[in-house]
Image (cartoon, one colour):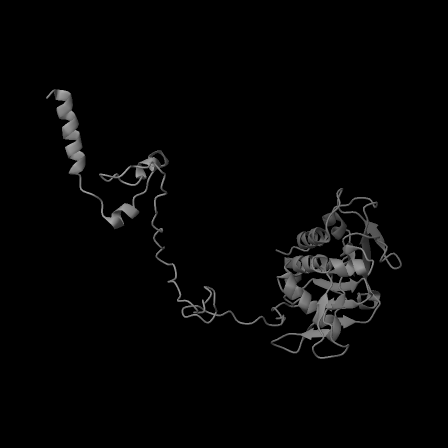
Length: 330
């Protein structure tokens, strides 16, 4: 017997004595695409071998450590975020927006001589809409504040421009004004004159809700109840007052409107031009677009404070900063 035949016999004998894999081990073998055809049915003596491809049976991947156990048939599956499942905490139900008075020293109502900055947010988009389908005057009747994010279809049905439903502008202006140092120093007064003619007085010590959703609910309460008191006192922090606005301004007060067509002046220089006991009332349009003639009947001056168009919140901020610099408020 030659050497070639001996090598062949040794190879066959080695294959015959190779230990076979167990059944559970064979199922867990991961075959590469290049070796898929090697997984055919093993050849048995006396049988004709058929070269058919047989897809290997892969074992299911191991379940993650935090996966839930399989539920028996017919059992109800409990969601993962169930508030009543053990180990979880339920959130409290949402409450109605409430107002809290901060410890500021606002100007007394009888004081007419202290120099102050007065801001009137004119043409503010604060309008309620009856959202519920119940009868008028029912206890379950619900109202919402018209806004361009949630009531686009309603505004189209009423054939009104979507820019007329922008109460977020008033919200931004109030946050800017109430957080300013000139307000915390007690030298700022704020009024809101809505597009429907409602005049609102804002107490300088009020803390307006930071989120717009809670602010909208607060404005709905104000427009229906006509006043909102503090939670820790009987002081009215927001209240509807009688028109016109000139009845609530001090006698020595310069009434100023802003227009892009007016000559540009620096806000600091304009505040410095006031008299020793002269206050200034700034009429800011709290609207997306429209005419700026809402105070032409009683204005004393018209100015422009920038070469660029500014938002209402930025205009309020520029006057607050100017008053703080001139009146030495840090």
